[in-house]
Structure formats: structure tokens, C-alpha cells
Length: 259
Image (cartoon, rainbow, N blue to C red):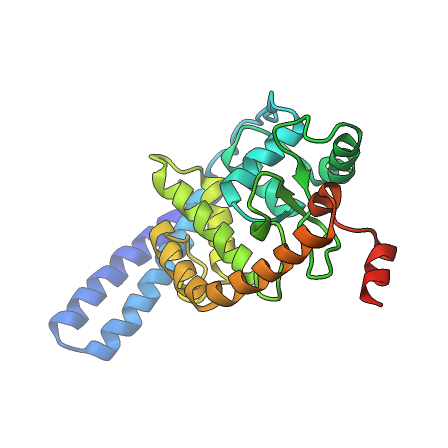
């Protein structure tokens, strides 16, 4: 054990004794101050002991036996909402055995559209676009063709609603696991930072608390978002052929429709 650790342990023992004496003497202000010193000393001890731990042996990167499109579909099924590539990759790598990279998703939607155009509905699902209120593909978002049309279109509130939905789904999945992966808990904690009441400070998020907070905010937005999405979905069903309902209209078509 290093001299620094020895000194910290002596300091912690002294502070604990001083806290006991202050509490016994009913010197509350002094006791609070000493407790703060004790917490800082214990944190310094934690940091010092961690620094002395040998690094873990390097691991071979995990690879999934599933094709890329199936890994993406698996992540979307967990999230339940149109999602950007960055979060799809994070969810896949946190929950499933795989090392998906964002660069692997770059051309995926175009490949799916080409496949659908050449042989419509030959596959059980397609990784398609989420449509904006102008019926064009939302930049960077992927959706599942088997979802209801209302889930594959976006209104003004949809980005926030979908973020809350995804956070809830991640937390629910974690709550069902006997031993949640540390990487998945870190992912939930990062997302929970953006939801009022979901986590205190920068500590690890509790799935149950995150679920309650996300659902509470969802209730505020849900009715308006549902109505807005339904209106876009109805327009898409009336105006677009099958391929454009899944992958959106081209930019020039959008401009002509707006004239």
C-alpha cells in the first residue's frame, strides 16, 4: 500500500473520531463541516485505490453473427421510435453482442429503398425513413416499416416525445435484467440527465425513477403529438405511393407539392 493511501486512511480514522465527538457534544455546525471533510477524504481514498488497480487485460472486440440490418432492427425494436444512427449504435453495443459502427449505417437506408423498389415487400421488414410534415425523409433517422404509419411520421413535438419514449424503453429493458450491463446503465444515465426528475446530479440513474419521470413528461405532450402525427400520416396515405410512404418524397417533389 502506498504512503498516500496510508495517510488517507489515518486521516479518515481521525475525521470519523472527530465527527463522533462533535455529534456527542451537539456541535451541529462543526459536525456538518467534519462530515464534508470526511466525504472528501473517502473520495480521495477511492480515487487512490482505483489508480493502484492493475488495468484489465485487453479484450478481443466482440462481433455479432447478425447482419448489420438485423442488428439495427434489433435496436429499433427495443427503442420503439424513429432513431438516429448514433443512438442505434449505442443501444446495440450496450445491450447486444456486437460492435456496430456509425459508418456502417451510412448507406443502409438507400440500400433498403433500392431493395424495396426492385422487389416490393419481398422482405418481412425494411429499415425506412421517418417522414417530416412535408412528407420528406427526416435527416438521419431510421424507422421500422412494420410500425404503424403514425409512428413513422413526425410532428413538431415528435423529437422530444420519441426521446422520452426511447428512454422509457431502455429503462424498462434494464429493469427486467437480473444483471444490467454497466454500459447500458451509463447510456440510461446520460439520457436521464435531459429529463427533469429522472436522476439526481450526475449519479447513475435508477431505471424505475427514470421511467416515472419520462412518463410524467410524456403525458404532457402525448395528446398533441398523437394528433399532429395522425394528420401527417393521413396525408401520406392519401398522397404517396407505397415506396414514398416508407422512404419519403424527393426534394423537388416536396417543393412542387408546396407550390
